[in-house]
Image (cartoon, rainbow, N blue to C red; front, top):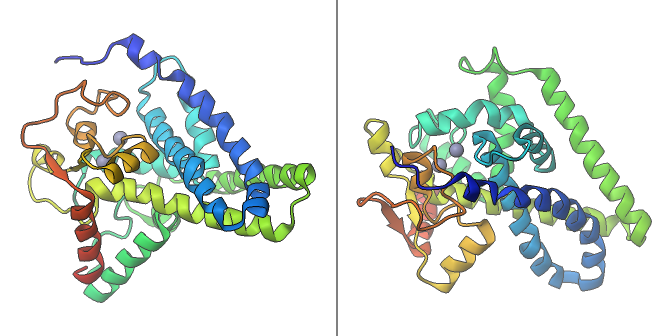
Length: 296
Ligand SMILES: [Zn+2]
Ligand SMILES: [Zn+2]
């Protein structure tokens, strides 16, 4: 099998994990003071660098799951990024393998933790909430579903979930305490800026997931289902901006399924895309979202 990327290229990615592990806490530390000084203009600061760092952290956590970068402590970064993303590391550890084996089916627990909701109205409501709240909704549902799910319940550990909650509290309580001590920002500025920040970040990272897989249920074997994963074009300024803010995860996403052994995301153009790969524009994606809410 052709290997498209060299070990040297993969190792060149290591700095990103160290950089993001430091940059996110610094961003969270200064966010409340930016909010108090800039007012609504701070929304721009939340979009960049805020959502950009958050989606980066999520991409890197995913890549630690795959152990794509050989010269970093993948397990350490996987755990750290999970906690900073306010998720329980065991959730993604359990479900991501099924995103690959069950991709574009209702059995993909990462995307459809409730499976297919039979009632059309409830399915529309669920889809609307998913678009409105983003990945926070699917993470929360996974936390409730996995302990009872026949595929995962024996592996799911309540103690690990409790440990994750403690880690979230420790990390963010320390950052909030440091922020208020250093800058003397009002509690209301901290609460409001953090709420908007995590909401926007949650929505943004979920769009990265919905572009390739949202409302996409495919009949067929693994190869057929992999091939239908959508890729966002890179023609227009808004599309390029989306790729910039989300680190190109949707640009050649089909490769993550057809060439899962290759760490293709940081190297667009290096691994050839299948000839019948599916490309969509942001306009097409708007139709996907519309159908999720209107048709269910
Ligand atoms: Zn993956
Ligand atoms: Zn995928």
